[in-house]
Image 1: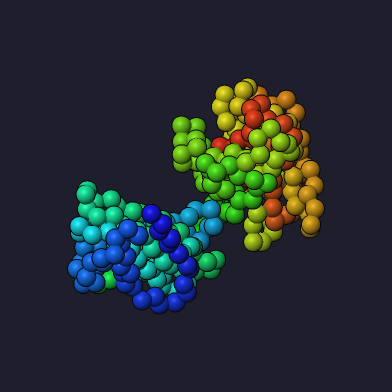
Image 2: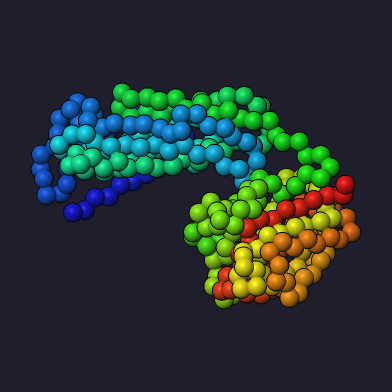
Length: 286
């Protein structure tokens, strides 16, 4: 059976509908009205909170299922109230007949551009005659006073990232080792290849003098061993602290205050096959 689906990101208002098709071996399609009435759509969660920090992502999941006896191709479209931006605006999928019903779900990232005014904005999800509105509440930017972790939620950067992890996993504020791999943490994507690096960058210059990191436990077998803390200086990176032979989970490095728009951990060797960080924090003078 050959089924090819094309999903395209479409800007602006989209017209929702359901395109009908049956498997290649069947030449009979269900009536349009009947097929549309058999497709059930829902979005979750019912409401979300969001921040303009790029590594505190918000997402909405859309699910389609077929309650009829004929297979169909169905679609749903999404539209975000400006200035919010969606990672995609179209969901197309094949839905087998209800024997039993098989739900298909797609997740859509919600991006809040820098400078967005706090408030509530709507994301509208449509499939045929069905429509759901998911309110997105944009929170004010967190205060960054003395002692604040400057890396929290900011844009992460890395030499590579393993497919089981997300790039933002080590700047999300979660240092719980039990959440490793499923909810938090960063693992590079090049087994037994060094150096690796992971860091954070800012849209404006920051003054920094301390970096703290948490590596995978047990650190004596899974942690990073030899690494540099570097600041970005124009188009180059400059080392401001070095650690050799580390066997601790939590490492604190201090250095003379630097003005920079990015900090990274350059990892020369890790005690496992991969470089692994649970969390990276960066601080300025207090």
